[in-house]
Image 1 (cartoon, one colour):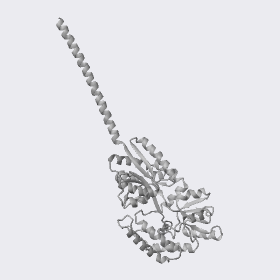
Image 2: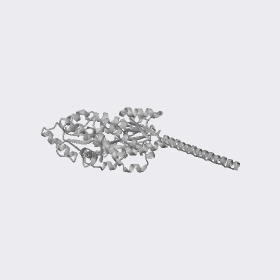
Image 3: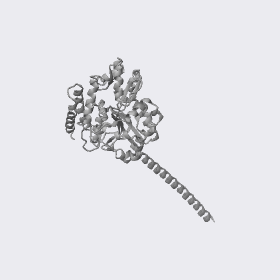
Image 4: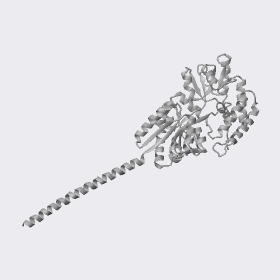
Length: 432
């Protein structure tokens, strides 16, 4: 009997030991699984952490809005960090070019579209369609998109559209905007005869950027096809001859002053010595601040055809070095966020230019602002400024000949041929 009890006791002890050991094994296994899951989760989180280097050259007000947008984006996407760095215009272009040749360049650059004339030939940026997809661009203004293309590819995502020249008028002198240039000249002569102004119109006569809109009124353009691989300068044309005759006649008829650089023209307008001024939206606030009753409208038509000022955009480029799939996804997400309707409308508060998102363009915040609405009317008559490298040679060819024209040192009939020759020489010197 004793031996049976002893055996039962041993059996109980063994069962207890087995139970304890089994529980320990289960607990150990559970801990290992938890640790493994935690490790895997941490590893996944670490893999998805992305830091995006973002360079820009915006104004102070716009930078503040950008910082707010970045903070909002990061709160929604905690695994993505945006590091913003500011540069002035030329420094941005120069530093991005040099940094991109090494490994310290940014992933995203926000700047003017003429940067593309340097970035694309240098293979420093990549077509944005490759990362954003074609559908992304369906909600953008088509004119703005065209201004941000290079050789037909969308190398930039424009976030604002502007830089266009408009006709500004002093409402104290001219209550209603002229609808034609012939009407503008008639009003000018009347005001001059009444001794209310010295001249009717002023603009910067030094830089061809301020006179090239008139070339469009005569059907001319400075290149045959800016999207071709070898665009040709087209300055020696009948349209350019009409442009030259028109400018000289304005001066001979004393509608415009004999001499006027940017500051002289602007001051004549502020002082009430001219009724009309050709200038851009970057100065609208200056005239309003000076107490002027400012009117803004498109540059009026000449013989039924509207002048065509150049429009320019600012926008986002993606570095060619962005190849990692996680970084590509983060870049795409950030660019979708900052180009949404709400984000672009917030940026408008700072830069006072037209947004490019179609939903933002249709928002009452834009349509009810008279200064922005006036820009829209002019932008519809603008053409995108060529951003190819050869444009530098065209400006350099037009500027001295235009100055000779206003100084009476060259006849309008001789100006187109001389510009063409200079442009071809300049383009050749650039290596094209």
